[in-house]
Image 1 (tube, rainbow, N blue to C red):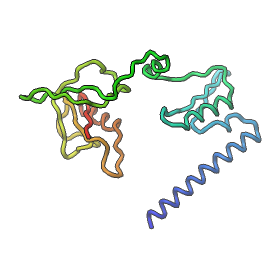
Image 2: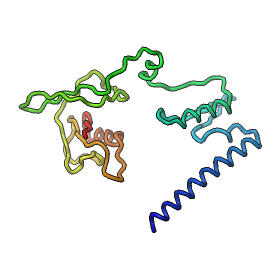
Image 3: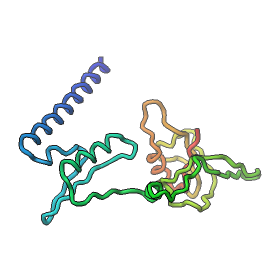
Length: 192
């Protein structure tokens, strides 16, 4: 019964969202108010006779492109600016060398020969690119996914966590990295 109520609540919410968008579009057409026709991802600010429209986008979302197009069509701005990281800008200019999807990672355990493995490149978080990050490895069996603050000392060490999260639990990498950094870890190594 609880799942039926949850499903019904979701259906009602979706219907309300659709009706709200239809209402906004009809109001915009009736009044000619540009702001009513803007997508919900568009923010607006005005000062000293100048207006700024900011569209929140997600690089992997096809909807983002439609929201940008709709905003430009509705507003007809004098200037359009786009925020890109250096890697995407280099790709657009054709000056970017494509990195292999995996990068070499050397792990040395005390008293053993170094082991070289291939690891997922994290180019979006390259603040330490080209530097050596070293320290002891720590894996906390009671917290394998790294979803809570470590209960063991990780200061100056590399925290090893499992990829993903238990079924039905929120476990993005950003949360794992944040908790590890709060505990003083130098880095997070995510393994399958």
